[in-house]
Amino acid sequence: MLVEVIFSCSAAGAVLGGCSDSCSTTIGSTEVVICEEASTQAESEENYRSDTPGSVWTPPPPWVLCQIYVSGGVEIETFGTIWVKSRQGSRECLAEKEYIPIPKPPSSNSTVEKISDSQTLQEVFRTSPSRPMAYVNPAERYYDENFEFWVEQSAQTKSGWLFDQPVSVRFLPRSANWSFGKSGFRVGHIFGSSGDFSARATVEFQVDYKPIGNPWVVNAGSISVNSNSLLITALPLPRETRLIG
Image 1 (cartoon, rainbow, N blue to C red):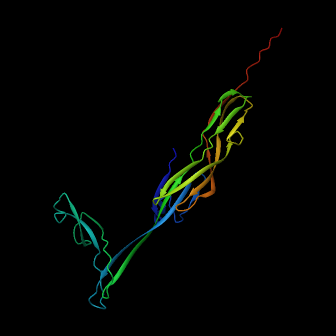
Image 2 (cartoon, helix red, strand yellow):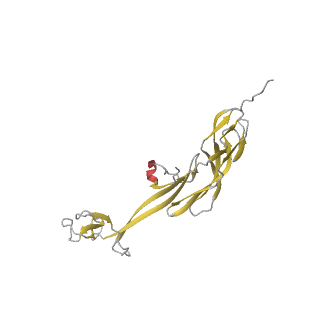
Image 3 (cartoon, one colour):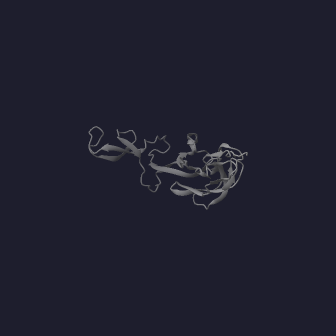
């Protein structure tokens, strides 16, 4: 069963698989990998004031939002909870989350410290063409007769979403080569001797892809996929009976 895979990771966590420091579209021998990057940046601001010029100042713990019961703490459990602003570590909390204050214009007796946390995220879409189905008609006849083979010649489009934007990969069948040495999506073949034979086609697909916010990239590469295997029985010729008078 073919599965299209979409996952995300930080560029720093490339060892987890799929993501790497180099994020680009890669066309391998069996699959296409589209990688897109996006940068995130979180900033928080705190205003600090020093009343003694020239003194060594140690900033207090940061403000956080502390979740407590409506009873005012964590000891008496109630049906509801509230979030209160408090210094980190100053009280027991059911949970903590970052406090982001409303920005205020700086004043002459304040200093503003801006803390930035930037991270590059990657999301990856991996896909492959589905296996084309091959057919033969008939599957059993005399070995000196023609067997007709054909394989599906249908375009395939696989789509997904990266960072909530669509990406697509298109597989267009260009050629088919059969295991008995002939080429074409529909061919005839005479085996020339009796016996059981197997046959399959290898279909080469042209790969087009459409990344985020860009037009289609046409003929970016190719991928070859084997069809299912067919079993053919070539029967021996019937014996000819002659009357001798």
